[in-house]
Image (cartoon, rainbow, N blue to C red; front, side):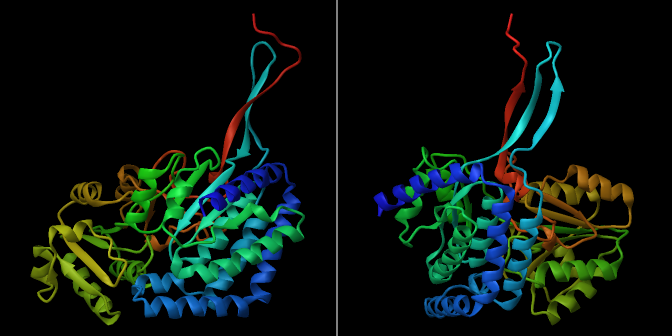
Amino acid sequence: MIGEIVQMAQNARRAARVLASASPAAKALALRRAAARLQSEWALLEAANRQDLEAAEAGGLSRAKLDRLKLTPRVRDDLVAGLLQVAEMPDPVGEIEGLSLRPNGLQVGRMRVPLGVIGFIYESRPNATVEASALTLKAGNAIVLRGGKEAFRSNEALVRLLQDSLLEAGLPGEAIQLVPTTDRSAILELCHLGGLLDLIIPRGGKELIELVQREARMPVLAHAEGVNHLFVDESAAVDKAVDIALNGKVQRPSTCNALEKVLVHATIAPEFLPRLEAAMTQAGVELRGCERTRQILPTVKAAGEEDWHTEYLDLILTLKVVDTLEEALAHIARYGSNHTEAICTNDHAHAMRFLREVDASLVLVNASPRFNDGFQLGLGAEIGISTSKLHAYGVMGVRELTTTKWIALGDGQVRE
């Protein structure tokens, strides 16, 4: 198997050279063909996904991972829309930026170029197979995918569809490949292909990400946990704050951009917390809270220190009463994971201060944290959300899968 993975990476490297100079029209055609095939071949994809779901349920996969694994008509429609949106986006490859004229007449600037070959290691999410492949293709990269065992049949079917779409557009099928094993040793082998892979992106649980970061022989772009907060300021509109919190927690609790903690200003807490409790209880959410929260909501479970660090990925929400914006900022700085943070406020100065001072890949004012998503932010899709700051911070779309090289345009200049 080790030799097979090396061969796949070598094939991907050759394909990446072709893609780096492929026309925008050819890449867009491949994406449009993939969108059409997703619709016409959906019954086959559903059948493969059903097999994965049955095996995963029998194996005791968690509710959160089962939710990520399932391909639904809503997922299909989002993937089709995302593929078409990426197809129509401006092609960044070859763009020249910041061209300036030096005193000697030399023109100096930067040209945007693909990263090369990307390794993508992920769990549970077959939709990520399509999103990652679409973005890497648009950016002129090749990709080697290693999905989780729970989604293996779904991923196989999707990759065949994507490869057929590439070939229809006159592009090499090896630009998108799936490692044909779920053996964990394949992860280590990919991590050790520093001479063949230019970047590796892990997308999954904390254990997987830490393994890849520890073993990789090439740059890693990843995010850790989504310990995401909503701060309800004293000037917040209560109805709006309840709606935002409910959407953030309940709309899809198994995702990394779901809401996990609510901080509420003491002035508004007596009005806000009972309203929040009623809405969350009706939605089946278990609430945990600090002592001041429990003085207002006596039936809420006591929150321990571990709760403030925990990404639940489930219908559990922790609440804390704070006295000031400064206290909320300090709490987020201590317990946040640089993923997604939001404030609900009608105070412009507080909103601007929150935007400036909170260190997260997306900071929102009066909006749900569930918007930290490539499709929702207008990127068509995402390959992941980076909580490191080099070379990307936040959702990674097409432009984040390119880099720039310096170029110089001369007319015979020589250095004195």
